[in-house]
Image 1 (cartoon, rainbow, N blue to C red):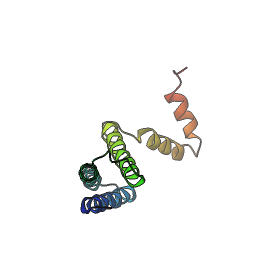
Image 2 (image 1 turned 90 degrees about the vertical axis):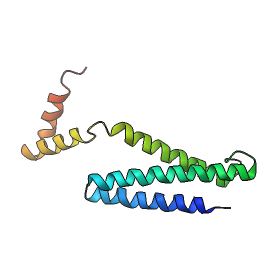
Image 3 (image 1 turned 180 degrees about the vertical axis):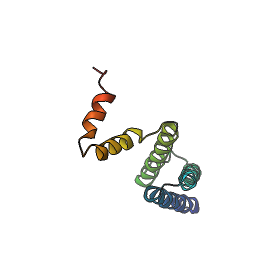
Image 4 (image 1 turned 90 degrees about the horizontal axis):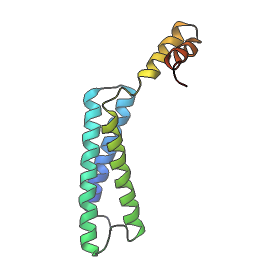
Amino acid sequence: MPNPLGYLSLALYVASFICYARNLSAPNMWVGRLASLLLAGGIFVQYLSLYQRSLALHTVPYDDLYGSMSLFAWLLGITYLGLELFHRQHNRFQHVHMCRKTCHQDGGFGYLRYFHERFAGWG
C-alpha cells in the first residue's frame, strides 16, 4: 500500500519532468538546475519511502511487484542523475551545433567536410 512519501516523491518527479520539458523547449540554466534539484529531492524521498516500507514489512523492498517496480524506478532516477552530473562537465552538443552551422553554410554538404576535418587523423 502506497504511503504519503510515495505520493510526495511522485509529485517531485512530475515537477522535475515539467522542468526538464520546459528546459528542452526554451533552455534556461535555472530551470535546468531546478529540474535536477527536484529529481534529487524525489530520489531522496523515494529512498525514505522504500526504507520505511522495508522496516514495516521486515523484508527487502523488492519482495513483491510493487516494491520491485518502486526500486527499479528509484535506480533509474539515480542512474539518470548520475549521468547528468557526470556529463555536466562536458559540452554535449558541441559537434551537433558545429555540424548544423557548417551544413547551412555550404548548402547542405558542409557536414562531410566537417567530419572529414574533425576525424581525419583517426584510423
